[in-house]
Length: 93
Image (tube, rainbow, N blue to C red; front, side):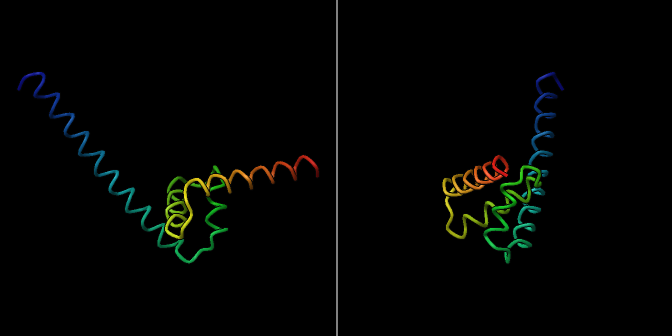
C-alpha cells in the first residue's frame, strides 16, 4: 500500500473512532436529560449559569429548556441578567 492509501486508511480509522465517541457522548447526554426531566426550569438554568457544571449537564439542561419553549436568545438574556444581578449584589453588599 502506498503513502496515500495508508493515509486514507488512518484517516478512516480516526473518523470511525471520533464517530463512535460522539455517539457514546450523545447517549450520555440523553441519559442526563432523562435524569433532569422532572427538574424545574430554575434548577436547569442554574446549571447553565455555572461555568463549572459539566458540559454534558449544560447541554442536557439547554435541550430540556428549549423543549419547554425557551429560545436560545431568551436563555442567554436570562442567564446574563441573573449574572448581572449577582454582581450587583456582591458590589453593594
